[in-house]
Length: 246
Image (cartoon, rainbow, N blue to C red; front, side, top):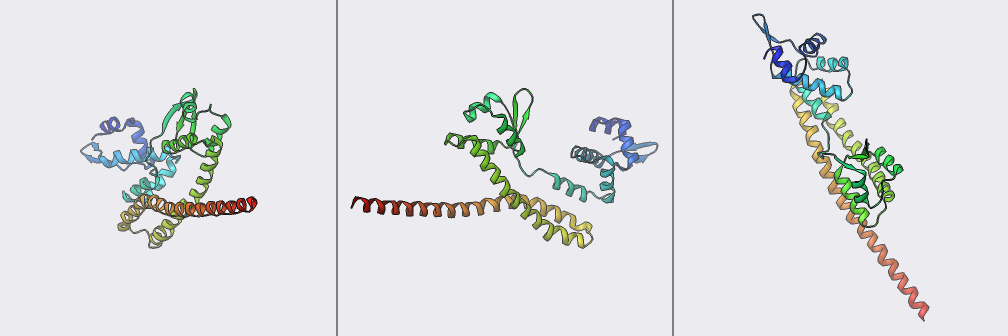
C-alpha cells in the first residue's frame, strides 16, 4: 500500500508516518520506481507503538525497544504477550441506584474509596461506577445476601488480595528463574524467542488452575478442621450440661 493508503488504514496522518520513520519507529518502505510501498508489518508496528504509548512509554523508549529487536518480530510478539491482561473479564458500568439495589445499602464514600484502592471498582462522573471484576462483584452481592456487611466483604477482599500478591510473585519468580534467566544467559538466541513466549502464555492458565486446585484442597482441610473443632466444643458443652443437671 502507498503511504496515503497506510495513513487511511491506521488513522494516522502522512506527516506522522514520515515522522515515525525519521525517529526509527517504522522500517523504510519498499521502493519501486519513485513510490514507496508499505505492508502489514508497518500496520502491526504502528499498532504496537500505539499500545506501548498507551502503557506510558515515550517514543524514545519505544524506539530503543524496537531497535533492540534487530528487525525481528519475535521480541515484539513477546512484548505483546507480556503486556496482555491476565484476566478475561469485561468491566461493567453501573450507577449508584443499581449499586444500592445490589448491596441493599447506599454506597458509602469511604467504602467506595477503599474499594478503589483495592482495585475492584473505579468511580466515574455522574454517580456511575466501573466494576473492574463483575465476578468479584457478584461474589460480594451473594455475601451481602448471606448477611455479610460491605465492611466485612471488603476486609475479605483485602486479605485475599494480600495473599494473591504472594501467589502472583511466586509464579512470576518461577518464570524468571526457570525460563527467562537461562534464556538471557544463553544470549537470547533468536530461535528460542517463540519458546519463551509460549512459556509465558501457558503460565497464565497453569497459574490460575494450580491456584484453584490447591485452594480447593486447603479449603476442604480448613472446613474439616473447623467442623472437628465445632463438634469438640459441642461435646464439651454437652458434658458440662449433664454435670450441672446432676
